[in-house]
Length: 205
Image (tube, rainbow, N blue to C red):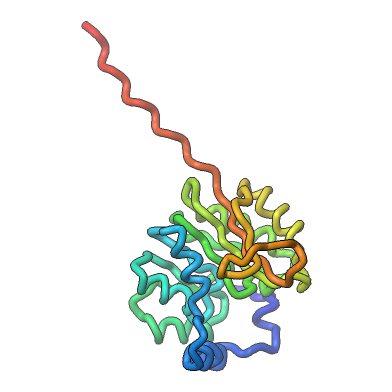
């Protein structure tokens, strides 16, 4: 698997070092499950955690009874996720070419995932995420603004993938989005599926 992602070439904490950052935050009393609470508010039965990292969001969702699959390109991050929750379904894959062969009620990309994919792969990633949505399913994405991806571009990618903007917030706690902040949480929705044809009455004799 050829990797040109910004994440793998970035000078950032990864694996255990990344996990320890959130462990310190949790120990200090900070709620580190804002993304999971946001996702849970839609009551999904199935969730794809795309760019799952060390599994913080996916593990919390599973604790709340959600059937969740976590996908990441970084083996060091997945190693921690598998250690923490070996019973969950963790996949090593590139989001730009992902094909799990199933669909989900909701796909979440938290933690600036789209800012760390390979340059030029953003549209392909959004298309692949949309392809994993069940009819009427939601794509939930949060990322920092002014860091290389504009909301106009992101909305263009979602429109091409036949997704419609349902709501947008400034934080995972649903602070109103005014357009002048430095972060956005966007909820886009897939089109509902076709209603099944009504059963035909048997022919009259």
